Image 1: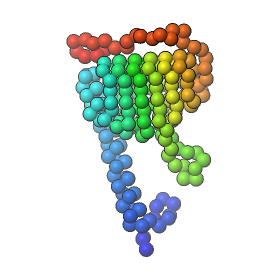
Image 2: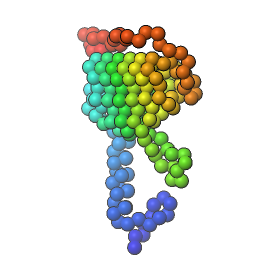
Image 3: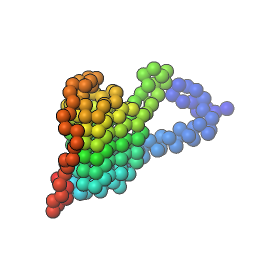
Image 4: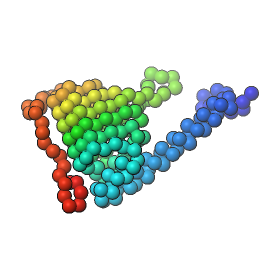
Length: 202
């Protein structure tokens, strides 16, 4: 009989104990990776930051700019399209799939999460759902997107909004929780967010 118990004082078999140890090691390595990427993201050279984010496992399209202080959780599940801008201090959660389209402008300190605790679980377990952001979306400063939402093409998320439900294409949403407050007039969007210079993308 095992002498080891979990946090709820349930006895663990050797196999369960080894699984918990392996999970703890993997979690610690992921935290270390997150910390290293965060530290390196403050280097004021855009090309270097982009290289670090790509090496971490994020798939990034052409001409996308990553600003300083970006925090990535489990970057292997994150895909960012072409000609995007990711602002300073943005949190991108890859604990489930996070797909960001082309020409997406994510302002400073935006948080996009796809994992959260189940408040109705007696063990307060983590649950996750993928998040998708369509082409030509603008997400205003300090907005928060919660797990499972899909933001349609051309939609606008106002500053400070908390998005808990899907956002229809070309809809402007704001508030807590975010609700429709308007509609984008132009539907045939073709603009570009970044431009190449001698020293990289700006």
